[in-house]
Length: 309
View 1 (tube, rainbow, N blue to C red):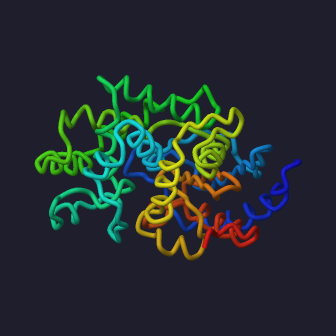
View 2 (view 1 turned 90 degrees about the vertical axis):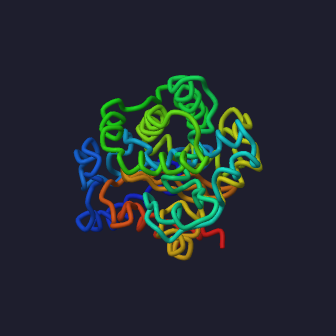
């Protein structure tokens, strides 16, 4: 293994595996309840080599809330900052990612940021396309470009499972429609939203996506500017302030890198001007973050002094 992180990764994965027994999978989405709580995998991409840990590093899992980073970037490309941030704010929240509380108490009733469910629904409604299929194709092709993987698609079983159990997200969407944040058909929006969350990747894919974000949206191999530099900067800022749900403040102190988690157990990390990190471990804490994944990033950050602060 030529990449310098190789042997360290093996040791770190062995250490953090102990944390998986304290977490639980996201069983409120039936299709995610099938995940193996013992899985821990990580990939690091440095622009030249991919380093894998021991474990199922090529195993596919769904993006879930990691997709919020990518839909935000695409919505900003499609519509610009003024339109996007007229619909969603820029402030962190101490509430759970699926909370409706702030929508009811704020005036205007727009979501605090794009990384909570309400904000992600509002952002998803801005993606250009006449149909759900057209919007999804655009997003999937965007992710294919960032990851360099032409095989990326979405998991129909997971998407259907999420769509059928999305009552709270429906409530958020209808509330926002009542207040003019969202327009259009809510069921069509939920169809797109659940399919975007069900897009499948591997740790390898996430590491390459993280590397592109870390390098101002530039593709690591083709050098194509896939995400404009300013949009890449905005997205990374949201990853720092809001990317780990309502544990983002503690994560910034302990780890200090732009990252975004999802309830499938995935985490993407983007260390500015350095590396991209992809992690998968589906045993979650009470806030919806991967227990072993969080600890692994803490060990990596400490060992290689990755914190941006």
